[in-house]
Amino acid sequence: MNERVAFDLECAAAQAAPPLVAGADEVGRGALAGPLVAAAVCFDYAEWTADDFALLGAVNDSKRVAPARRQLLCRAILARARQVSVVVCAAARIDERGLQACNVAALAAALAALQPAPPVCLVDGYPLPAGAPPHRAVVGGDGRSAAVAAASIVAKVTRDRLMARLDGCFPGWGFAEHVGYATPSHHEAIARLGVCVLHRRSFQSVAYRQLGFDLRE
Image 1 (cartoon, rainbow, N blue to C red):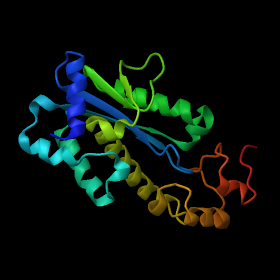
Image 2 (image 1 turned 90 degrees about the horizontal axis):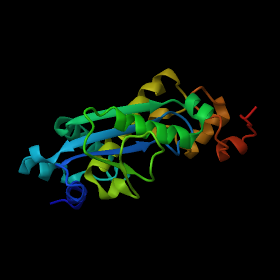
Image 3 (image 1 turned 180 degrees about the horizontal axis):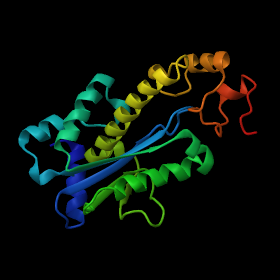
Image 4 (image 1 turned 120 degrees about the vertical axis):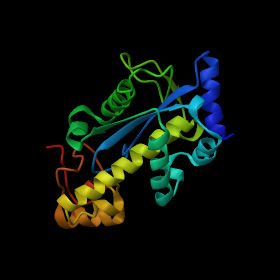
């Protein structure tokens, strides 16, 4: 059995709960442009077949899975998950509330959208604030829990697809290529075109400072 699936089952057993485990994770936290996307995925391991365990044994932190493989795994996750929820937080909202506040709010909202609430909820990173659904924070959870890893894949695929669509609305910045992260090509596009509404103006990025932009005003 995959060690990440085994971790989820151990967490359920520790709570004397059925093997119904949800994981939550986010992507886009470090991007210079575009939204933050959080996802929650609930697996009912009691319903899985041997084929399911074999297929989803490849689920891992989305950063460790090649793009083409992520697409295939995302489809497999959506086909086998008991519940899936996705929350998108736009750049303007991040500028208004702050990155960390948006991050934890999006994770909490993704978990809260799972109804009925799973008996075991795991979140990548650190505990969510009061008012969030009951959960266990797991540092490095996207590499330890299959449910959290699945959430990271769903969030990553969702965000990448969204950035590819936004590239058509905001041509020239190359959003389909770098999906909003601070790459050399993104720096060059900002130097050439300036910034658009997708850029997080609260970030004091090197890409802004080196080009003489001060977007705090």
